[in-house]
Image (cartoon, rainbow, N blue to C red; front, side, top):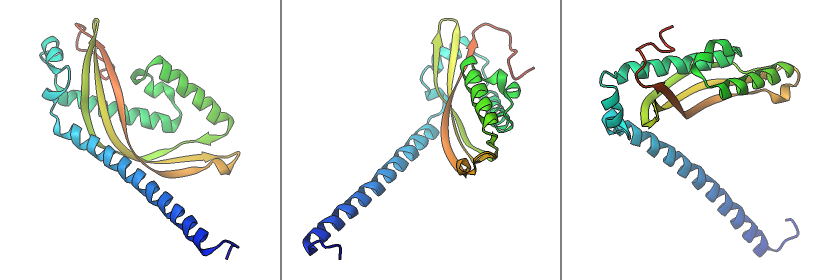
Length: 188
């Protein structure tokens, strides 16, 4: 007994149960939304992607399978380079802004003597989500559903150590100038 009447105790318990129930519902709805989004993109073929017809008219020899293999290569390379804190290996795949942000993060991690090794990288799916044209440029937005083991280790303060399994979806944008010879960052 907490010195409350039975009636107040029952009310407090009902409020706690209601809050717990709402909490569980929130996470179930978030999970259903993510699953629905993933199921939706898996049903769409490349031909149904927004901007496909315009893109194909400008790029009649485009091979979507070869492109998605290149996306896979870039994704793995960026994750591995992040794990090694090596922007040199990933530089050709990232924008100037991402490059600056990663360099800053790596400097901060160096000061903290922190590492972030990732392992067991698994790509569940890669798909073209949308294609846009901007002036002379084609922009292909690609979804990547992946998972990995993610570990933060900090030599200065082990309270900052974390470890877990991440399951996520990222969207990457690939930009290419129309009319250039068929040589790209993956060829050299």
